[in-house]
View (cartoon, rainbow, N blue to C red):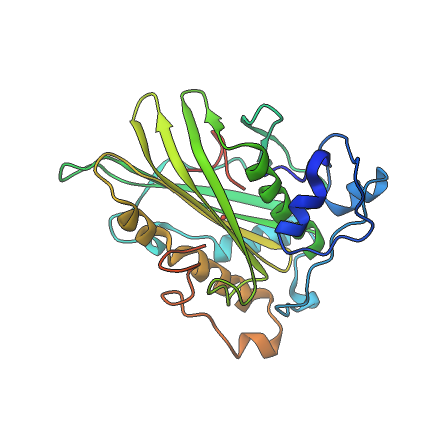
Length: 295
């Protein structure tokens, strides 16, 4: 996931529900490299501040890459979290030393982790073709930032990308089209389980698998942790069937994160019901990816 690019940073941060101090017109420049700290150091607008919506315990938050990798190993989804018909793909896990970045040409590529990211991992799954229906591809990603502010910058970056790219190249021969995104602050759109959630829908098209098929990407933040899921459909797969595959996975991963780094008060109360707290309306609230991680 790329951080916010300079051209329309103000609008992206406002849409993502973040408070931006000193936001002025005429900003320009390249991608920030290390989240809020890098943006501030290059003379850009003051970094966003997250609302104190969901208490995490600073003493429990990872401070090193090893601690972040250990947290990810405890909370990231396996195939069983999506459903009995879901299986691992090969490769199953992404390269943990890299993450996906959306370039200026709206094409995804992988880069080394920036300084603001302690660890990230994407797992890949599928529902095999059968019963006259095509294969479905799914993913789950967890990224642990050094601070909640860096996580907020990643969320704002996702909004910025959705504004600038209604079509994206995932990898050669695979693309996303007709993309649109919606952001929900805590308490909006049935988002009662994260600091902020974002959902993106569109179509996925593949030279080898055909299409267009329904596509969905959900992302949510909890303190310094960003969690996402994605699903790309196949022949004969209806949106409701695809959304059901992912509507429980993201809230359940966030619930696991809450038990690992939440404050004692929040761990003991207001635990989300994954069946009832899974995004806006009838569907759920997602580092999207290239070859290394995504639908």
